[in-house]
Amino acid sequence: TLAASFGLFGMNEWAARLPGAIAFIGTGLLVFGLGRRLCPARPWLPALVYALSLVPFISANIVSTDVILAFFESAAMFAFVEAWHRGNGLDRRWIRAMWLALALAFMTKGPPGLLPLLAVVAFLGWQDRAALRRLFDPIGLLAFAAVGFTWYAIIVAQEPSRLGYFIGYEVYDRIFTGTHARNEAWYGSFEMYLPVLAIGALPWWALSIAAAGGPRRAWSSLRARVSVRDRDWLLLLAWFFLPLVVFMLAQSRLHLYVLPLFVPLSIMLARPLARWSWFTDRRLIRTATATAVALVEIKGVLAHWPNDRDAREMARAIEAILDPRGIDEIAFVDLRPFYGLSLYLDVHTEGIRLDERKPALSRYIPEEGLCAEIAEREANVYALKENRTTRFVAGVRRCTGH
Image (cartoon, rainbow, N blue to C red; front, side, top):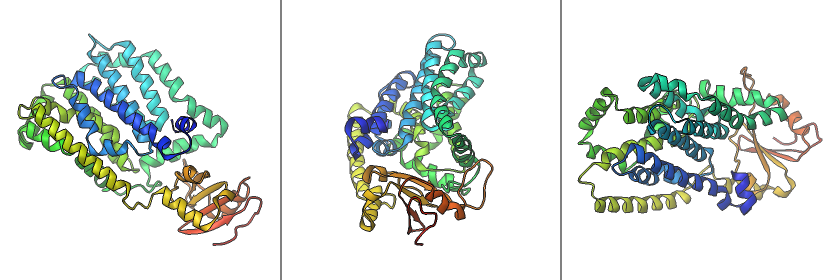
């Protein structure tokens, strides 16, 4: 999507942020479609809650695959809900559409794109095991394989070592190890996700609990819904909590990982609001307007807030040291790469990890082999390591500077 946007509109920030904005709007439309089935009293209210929640609103302008992933996961769940609500059993056409959307989600970010499927399988296991068998439609599975695996197959065919990278570094290490150094401590999930889910949906959390009669009544009502096997609530709870458990157990954790969960959360928060007599149209308009103004102000503040991950600042710092026109590639050694430099400096950017440990499914470059690795490349490479810079020149089989 980024390549297509750059191709159409040039290499600029506007083109970089456009795919995320389109995905945000598309997700909102899908939430509206889901609201027609899961919040019929006010079907547009879940979309309003989603659009005017802090995290989805802010993420709309962030260059991240999580925004695209949220769109495709929402499309998959929209297709499943349509299949479930159309007569007896599951409508095959919509189930095949679900598999296609899951394939696009898988192509976007790999296994995390299949977390909605976990919720669907658990839901059907509780509700209708016969329908569970129909879920795995052969044509749908074939479409998933053709779309979901083709890109990975092409990449691995071009460079077979990428298979170990995908399976090891991107899957195994993210789930079971702290290799990525992304809040892997046991309390990391509580620090990352709970504040995001709580603050990221304000003011709708407070209003929804008030609509349900307070925290105690809200909890009692939810338990009652589950005890009578209310299918809509069971689906929403599975869709929200099962992926959340996976995210909390995985060792790689970042705030935006839970962005797709704001779709079921928005629907759950909207359902009590839709039947709340106090929440008249006038009060709703006032609340939505005040929330929108506050979100715009917050986004304006964040745009000028100092950020040590700002690629623009890094680009200025590099330009103060050297002429980037003489550099083909910038390598970040044991540092998290600033991939945005490819936009500001027109250079290839990558990360290199030095580690004497060699987990079975991960690929590292040992420190003593770094110079040789760089020297063999047919490019001028500028490497940054531990806030010090080292210049590597192609064809020279030694490193200069420390």
